[in-house]
Image (cartoon, rainbow over all chains, first blue to last red):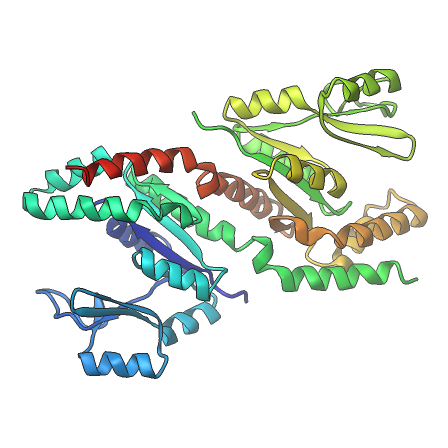
Amino acid sequence: MSRGVLVVVSGFSGAGKGTIMKSLMAKYDNYALSVSATTRNPRPGEEDGREYFFRTREEFEEMIRQDQLIEYAQYVENYYGTPKAYVEEQLSQGRDVILEIEIQGARKIKKKFPEAVLVFVTAPSMEVLRERLVGRGTETAEVIHQRLARAAQEAEGVDEYDYVLVNDQLDEAVDRLHGIIQSEHFSMKRNLDFIHEIQAQAAKFTEN
Amino acid sequence: MSRGVLVVVSGFSGAGKGTIMKSLMAKYDNYALSVSATTRNPRPGEEDGREYFFRTREEFEEMIRQDQLIEYAQYVENYYGTPKAYVEEQLSQGRDVILEIEIQGARKIKKKFPEAVLVFVTAPSMEVLRERLVGRGTETAEVIHQRLARAAQEAEGVDEYDYVLVNDQLDEAVDRLHGIIQSEHFSMKRNLDFIHEIQAQAAKFTEN
């Protein structure tokens, strides 16, 4: 059995990343979604081990010391990180593991796992993104302004990603993401052991 | 409309490359198969413009002088080459163009078109390849020996390709090839214009 593909999915707030992930998980069963650890407090309805692993500051810093995180970062006063054990276990079982993290985390992953596939989710245009955020009617003008400012910041690093996924039609976006990940299984860099075996076999044809 | 993807498909003789291409063309209609030009004589049943553009040595050398070929090579005493006009026309119309050429040609294409996608078709093992060649019952032992020796030679350069396609189940191989090519449409390098536009739009959010 071949090793799973490690996939990092990032995207502008409001681009519909969360909905795409939920649909992908519901539609295909070869994916494992990594659950992050955090020191922030659970919000109403959030469950430990589902949305996040909720940890105390002391517990989180112990995970850092024990090298149990693939990457971690601090936002405002809270830690966020990706526990290593689950990811490694799922990959070695041949499942494709998806990390839903932001750009700084994505960079750290790519550095540590050069074979990771980085996908950036965007709306068809920034105007559409703004309209979606306003249209939700759940955020204040102040929050929308903050999110757009953050999107502007994130946009600067987008070209470091391997693929860009425009979320125009949800179903189409989900199938495209699935197609991207599955095609990665056939990339040369993931099949070098097989190719070296083929080369060794082929070399025998010229021996006699 | 976005530009088509230029795809180079190579593979060991006997790996079933031709059958895969035929099925791909029959199943999906967004592909254009490039027809090579050659100075070799047509075999029974071959038609000018279908299997090859059959040209005289003088005509072929005139095409070389006029820079009308993307790549060309000489085998034994014949020229083989890829006419430029058709490929450019199809790509600009958004169709994915497939060149079925061998490794030296593939290398030249990659150098001229770094965004080209190189796919190598192989049997699951060289023993299976040998069995397929023998099983056909149409080739002499001498020819089979020559083909395997050539496969051994070609195997050395396989790791220069972007993807490896194992032809075990035909339908599966065809769908995988389709998936690979379609996913390439979403690669960052093919969407830099779009990303730069998104970045320019996003920058405006921080201006006011």
